[in-house]
Picture (spheres, rainbow, N blue to C red):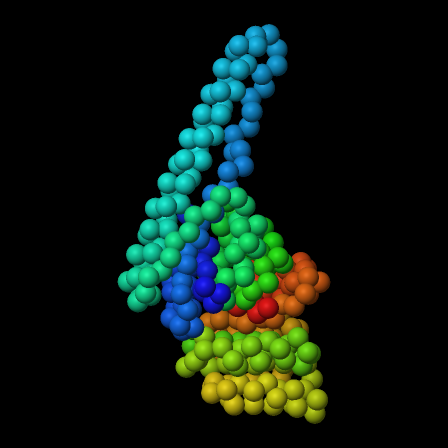
Length: 284
């Protein structure tokens, strides 16, 4: 299956949101849905300090006990993951998804998702995982790496699901931004929703032409589209527009490693991502 929606889940507070957005996306795209849980088997228990007057036999005995503890941790992690996957599957079935698949893999999350990407049309992930810092403005380190290394569209979601009715894309007329509009126009993901295109800058003939192109591209594809050109600070302007129009999903383009790095490290878009309580679709 090269067109499936893949949802990465764990025991975090974001997993229900991941399940619900993944189910919505799978139905909207008419695509199969798979949930994946990754068990990281790297040792979680530090080896105790066995220096001093311990004899060789005692040291070997403690190492055996340590190995047993790590094995039990791994076994419990796998079992917990299976329960999480089963709950996700049942939730998706109730949402009307046919035959959702469940996968459990050993390894690291990022490496596992990179291995899976050739079979993925859309990857759905939570803003943070179960091991991440819980501050509301924090993006999990795994998510930053996933966005940099997985070359598929990624939907970063909050804890609770809201059916997208108004989606917003910041547009600057660049080649990559135009590619993002074209991808948005072709996708059935937002059929029935209003697509808002916002240019932050002066009211110029060039900006009006760029906005007209974007709106025409969307409406010609059957989408309802609105747009605006507004001067001001980028982040503040986009936030104000979001609040005025009840935006419930942000759409961003990310192309190439350098742009992704700027997306997540120190840029205006980074601030939008970190502060957003909305789902963010990152197009590739």
